[in-house]
Length: 186
Image (cartoon, rainbow, N blue to C red):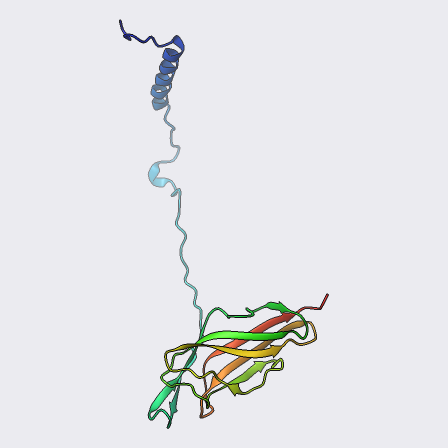
């Protein structure tokens, strides 16, 4: 007996024969190319990377002669993104109290003491005093700088830029930004 104990049904045999016919038949109908392979364009062309130039202004450290620290040292304040409170573009109500906080690093070699200040460089003061004491920080440490603002009463976009100053009155480090939008009370 050809199949032994089991007999395949006629339908299974017909399906296997048809499948074999199609597989053999497909090989004989290969597509023809109207253009020789060497003259054909590539199917995929990788995109070309075009570098762009972005100029970022680097803050310049300032040298400071410090009698309290005994030697000359370098002042540098480095902003650590993101803003801790009130990210840029935050919407606030007119007259709202704003406790703006930035995380920064004393990236210089000077220790910040009570002779260091934070001063308004541009924009609106929004009720914040300038100058104000810079948070004391040893060199190489991170700290949080907080400034209390009051949102203006008129709707609109408001900004405030602040910079650290050393004991000799020299500005140093990254600018600290406050950017809010006052929306009309509803």
